[in-house]
Image 1: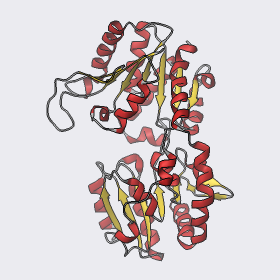
Image 2 (image 1 turned 90 degrees about the horizontal axis):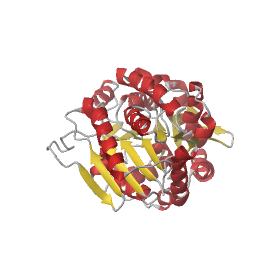
Image 3 (image 1 turned 120 degrees about the horizontal axis):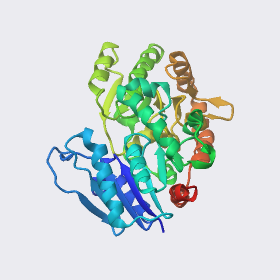
Image 4 (image 1 turned 180 degrees about the horizontal axis):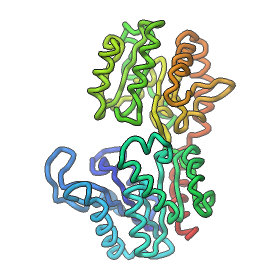
Amino acid sequence: MTKVLSISSDRKIFEEGSAVRARMVEYAGLFEELHIVVFSTRRTDHGTQTTEHKIQIAPNCTIYRTNSWNRWFYIFDAIWIGKRIIRNSKFLIPNSVITGQDPFETGYVAMKIATRFKLPLHIQIHTDFLNPYFKRASFLNRVRVLIARRVLPKANAIRVVSQRIFNSLKELRIRNFELRTKILPIFTDVEKLRSAEPSFSLQQKYSHFGFIILVVARLTYEKNVQFALRILKKLVKKYPTTGLVIVGDGPLKRSLQLQANSLQLSKNVVFEGWQHDTISYYKTANLYLQTSLYEGFGLALFEAVASGCPAVSSDVGIAPELLNHKGHSFDCPVNDLNCFVSTISQLIEDNQLRTFYALQIAPHAVDELAKTKEQYLHEYKNSIEGAYQSN
């Protein structure tokens, strides 16, 4: 059985009952031991201080807070904790692996620990970080690209969530790249999405909208929701009762609200905030819209299509695999306003095309990417264990 030390930045793992914690417990069932070091400060998400450092969430799964003074100490604290875990847990070659949840800060920590103890290194990639828009987002992202270029050549195994990321990594010319790298999409319970009954209807809630476009996204730079407002501005000139429902929250919420007002769209745009029941939104919207600058996968888009909602997206993540089928294309180049407006207009005017999409295109596209829980866990385990098999 394999012992795994994972370095993560996802603090939702500390929340009892969270999907992230439940997923980690499932992963632990695949291995002899699973230890997870999580970047965190001494203040919890609720603003209170904590001295709690180590929490056991399953018989063989333990999570560790770095309890750093601030984010600048994450790397140093995680390396120190990781080294202590390995010494105490007696990690041994060839059945132990260090995995980083990204090729950036957590990947760097994993690399340093793996190098120190001569253990196999596994890196996971969920973001299309070689996309030019990723680098433009911030100075930190430019530094992250440099870190990734250093970390990935040291990895014994790499897991990417989409063909797009796989293709982009080829430019790094990593030795034995294709042998080291596996494509494993994010797991989604497709049957649950298909069979779920909506608890409410957007059509009834916003009956003054003749056509409802849905966006589900964190309101940040890369999601490019401001472009969705520009698309709507063009659409309402011809279809004045078109409404845009935005589900999500984030640092750009206020500026997006101001933009909607300045574009005189206040009557056509609704900000719903973050919602747990996104399935009801997918099931009762007329169209799902993704305008991201870059995506590694595009989970919300996948969920929308799996729920039977017609969708239009920028050419990012898995959009081509989902939206280009049977002679129809519903993806557009990033920020191509004319393409988005004309594609959405076609779907507004053609009820039969929307029905054809939901009944004929969506199921076929989703099934090509979907995996059962058992298949996903099996492939995840193989991805991790591939690190010491190729070491």
